[in-house]
Length: 402
Image 1 (cartoon, rainbow, N blue to C red):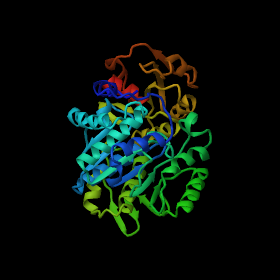
Image 2: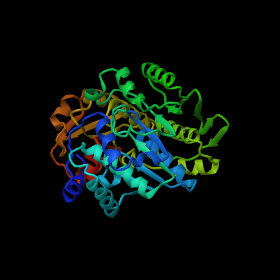
Image 3: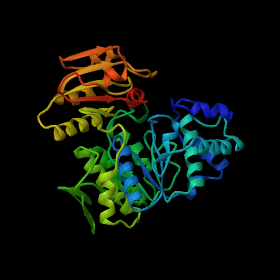
């Protein structure tokens, strides 16, 4: 479900399937029809369970400070399909999208692809036309069979690996890691964050197979007491808008990825880029004491809890939660309980949304309730002196704010 994509499909008479169909044969055939626009792009490819968007945001901001132009392809949509394809930080315009869809129509792509595959082709065509200095490419799901995995990047980046999308990626860390490691290409640097031993073993095996160079956070590069340390490059990071200990790690991964892409960096511009980087819906304060965060799985919820502990020591917060039923609801909520004063659960408009009652039954905490009042003036308003955090699905948050 990609908001406003259907409008373009209808206008240009291009049919595509809204189901998820992992595999690369269809998109490779489609890209051949439009001249393989992906082959002329300088790409940094990012996969992982959590941290993809944040790592890309840091890279995008650092590149901007060095006066490089950027293209970003990310998911899901925050408002609508336009913000999934960005150039220099701005969503693609309707006019640019029209140009791209006209190329796909003339090439005869109707009926060949899924919605996400079609949008991936659209991103490559747009970036070929606009010609940014660097493209930051985010996997939609997994890695090896994701439609973005048709590229040969400057560097592959995997910030984290945890269980998610188990129906498609597998029920063990090793299986999930196998999919994520699929973005590792022959003789290409690989930058990874801290992750379970089982996942790291899979990655090391893939690196050996592909004769790649592996750079691991905490071993080959690090951030200690506000300083990035990587090889011969060091920089003091005194400010960071994106809060939480995990964001310091994501910033370090971003810096190392750019270094491995052989981009010449200045300490001043890196520090300024990290300081100014931001990402909507990641511990974002939208009103006094009211925050939104797209934590939607156990690993992301754990990071959110750690951020709350570091930003508000000793405080408990009120949560408003809405989630998709496809997620591990029970474990996600368990990670938030140590910092919770209360939970309010809501049902939001999405075909895969869990009901408020389903969420409440999965929550092992006594101060909890459901509400039927899906209204931003109610949901996004504090009821007392405690901080209020709205979390769970990005679809919930974008629906409240847009």
